[in-house]
Image (tube, rainbow, N blue to C red; front, side):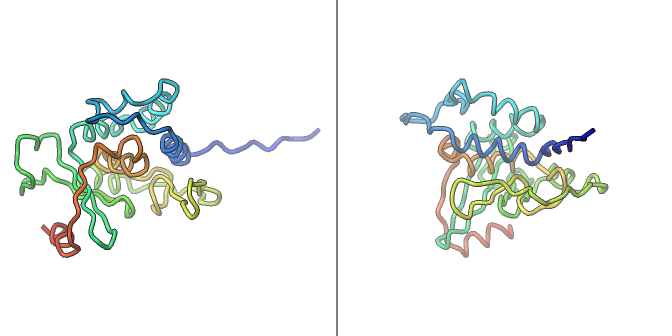
Length: 199
């Protein structure tokens, strides 16, 4: 009598990586004079299941992230060297100025997988008993050569910390054909980028 070895189920991290990569491969929306009020209006009906799956896996962050993009609250500052950083306004800061000392603008770095908001800090350090997953075979195939992106970046562990600000920036960056146009782009000098980081 032979026993079959059971294939391990993919982790949520691997599933989210796959979903984001599938959304990245969707055809770009037809060009319009201005972005529609709802990013999902440009999504083919056959692909909406991908977004529903992400909502199920990220129930407290995915829809708020789309809302941030919809309201043009995400700005990417890029220096001449190619380094970039995102600043995301909170939805409560819509009627306030560009930057305020109240902490209503958050710095997001997608490569470092970090956000300066308290929600991300709690997600990262609120539960200290995180079980590290087996990293063998976790890398996902990317679209381009050398593109080995995965959800959570280099952070180890089964469930990388997330917040709506980080999710919005990752979606805009990885799915730039569809969601990148909702991000305000600004070119700045490296000195200005450093100055913004220490404010």
